[in-house]
Length: 412
Image (cartoon, rainbow, N blue to C red):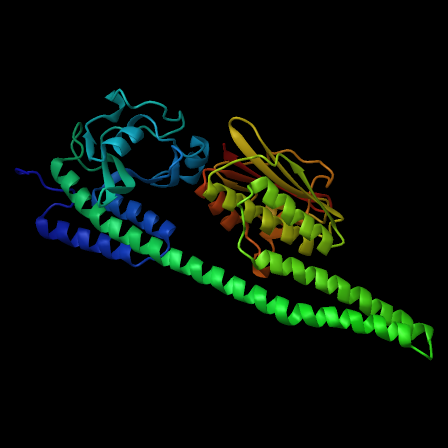
């Protein structure tokens, strides 16, 4: 390394900085939190103005892309998550560090959004588990150095060392989340079986008993018969709702594709609730499995919050696609809510875009999810994170008394 020193100065200070960064990373078990801490720690470790970490997927994009030094307004202006092209694709292909005095002079520096902050000196290092690339960490615009100077060879060695520890933290967090998902799936299946075997059977028996009592009433007091008939109605409704809850608790089965699964889910809810629930759209939409799971989950949460909290007479799910995007909408004509008291956008998009209308009108409690997070629904912050995790954007249109529209858009 010659006389070069890494960004933290003396060897003792460098060792302390690396130790602190590694400790910060290993304290977290959520993959997304681990990625955020890695980026923040790397930027601090090497005194970089900007830092980013991309986790590649198998579709030519990034499953996660976390940044440091870019404001939320700047990030929204930049637009969708980057694709694997140009310099990013080259780094994934070469699986090796890259250090540049001025990234703008590179022939592969193409396709960067106009709203992106200006980058100069650059350092990128892969995060590897053996030969598998878990992600790539990028640093740009080293601070507190003489003009014209940038990242050094010592900086590259230091970031490579840190990336090795980051790989362990990412792998550990993934294993933890996978184990937690398996536990949740097992618990949902167990609860679904118990609900069906115990509560559903009792409600069915209640319905039969009520019918028998109404038929055998010798005294025939009008009020008693009417009450028994009402018991029958209530029991039938409770049984239908319970079946819908059991369906909700089961893990999403997307084997038949997103469109078919949404249509089936809507049909179950339409039978279970007095509210008219309809599906309209393209049943042949095909997306990667992780994207389909996110779309289904957000649709499911929006539907249940609309049905439970909006007082809507009609709810409609719309799914359509073109060559560039897939759009999912959940609209109802319920009570709506005041957007000024809630964050109205999520993902990379903003504003109040997206079409309204349809059989369900301009929509209502579909996004009462915002106010219903305490009732088990997704809050807007969580919906935003889910949307951004697959490179999508989530928009909300809501008017008190005129309904709500939830609109999710992801790249095709």
